[in-house]
Length: 321
Image 1 (spheres, rainbow, N blue to C red):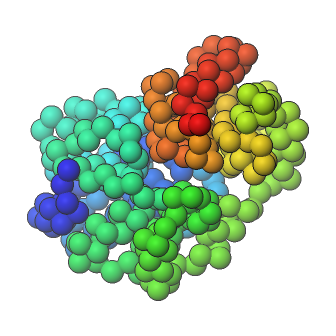
Image 2: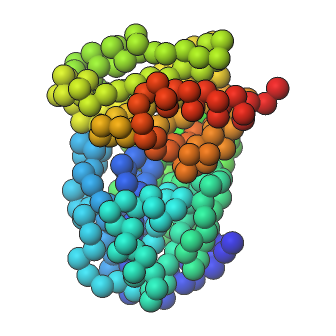
């Protein structure tokens, strides 16, 4: 693995870069991308942030989010991925990235232990949020985390750490957050807009989903299912389901919480959360996914009852006594 200083040295010499964020974007990948984009503008590097899909509306309160493109608009020297454990996580942009990677310099900045080190230059460090790694890179570039940069970094930290409540939050996380706060980040607004604010329809959907939780393995495993028909019923988009997986983990007996989001008939996006006895990165890896020991994800194909059985068995296999 490369050091952050090595990567900063490479990036200080370039003239242009495209920053790739992962599909179904969250606050961490978008915050990392936009913070680095703004930092590049201060050192004379032309850059843009790209994502394959729609940017969730809840992030639009931060100026700049609408600048994100669906695909690159110019031929850059360098391709940079942020918060992206593997090329497949780029979704529809994966073929474009792979084709460009054959002749361009590639940089991978991530915090997932499942990261495949797929770029020429890789910095992968396990942290509560990848924004902490991007802050280190921005500092190494000689740029101060102030103003918009601070807000974008704080967005990543707040959302990926569950408002600094996850068990992987440590002193380094708070030191990074303090640097962003000192730079002017509005933590109160960011926390409200991303973690608390919701529409009446979303609240109703959440209540219906929570009341229909399925429990397995002596109630130590809880699975929530959000169907396309439910989203249609309440007039909601898939990004409105973020956070549902965290609810069941507040229940005393539950060790692993899973949220299944129907993507299309017979296909479900699974999000896993664990209190620690179960390595859900290993569980997700069984099905072609990955992430962190306490938070991960993957895709399932089939009917819900079949998927429940697969999850139950995989969780059992990776439960520590």
